[in-house]
Image (cartoon, rainbow, N blue to C red):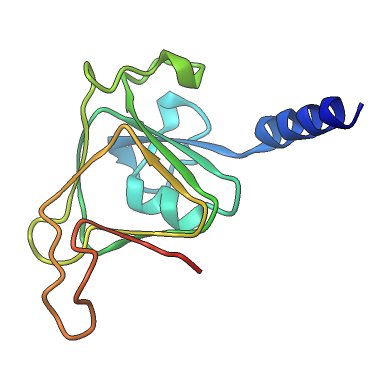
Length: 141
């Protein structure tokens, strides 16, 4: 009984998670509630709260600053832009790249967050303020 209740509660939490669809050519004011009104990666991260799931359409996302992903936010790449379920993504066919352009650290990943199906490149950590985590800095606490 206890195991069944735990599974049901887990499924309920997963079902209630906000989902934001993101495109390299997305609308910076879009809600991301569907692929047709996908938003930008930086906007999606700025409105994401704990439990939010971001679906990234394949392509390259050029950053203007370090992408600070909050805690318990899940980011999945590899979508073509038509999927309705996570298992439909194909990150080999739709590579998803986050590029910091060699100017700053690329991703600052919050506690219990997920970054899956995404290539991070051209991040640097060569300033007194940041000496580690040029590609991805993962928080432990």
